[in-house]
Amino acid sequence: MLGTIRAFWNDQRGIAMILVAIMLPVLIGFALLAIDMSRANGLHNDLQKGVDALALATAAELDGRSDSITRANLAKTTLLTNKTKFSTAGDHTLALADVTVTYLTGIPADDSIKLSAAGVDANGVNWASTDPKA
Image (cartoon, helix red, strand yellow):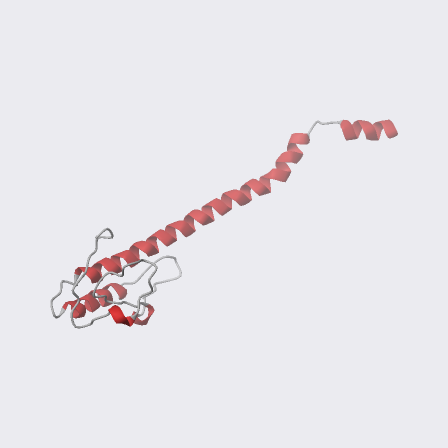
């Protein structure tokens, strides 16, 4: 009896099936995680493109004329009234209160400086650029 148990214990036939049965859920889990992360990354990129389009459309109207802020706000409002479709759950329209726009009179000296109302001049925008290197 002890010999039969020892022979069964040392028998390695069928060990591949056990390893596959153990590793298959792990492999499927990692595959699903990769799919979820790629979908999340794609959604993030789509949302970033939308925000960039909003900023560029608004900044394109800031040419220094007296009505430039009015035109920039109109461009912002026009883009925000578009419906977004990121899922099958239905349309979603952003409210104007969801977006905060600050018009600056110049570029801050350092990127770490927090923006405040001190640099805002609603009556005359004297600097606007859509080039990030400008």
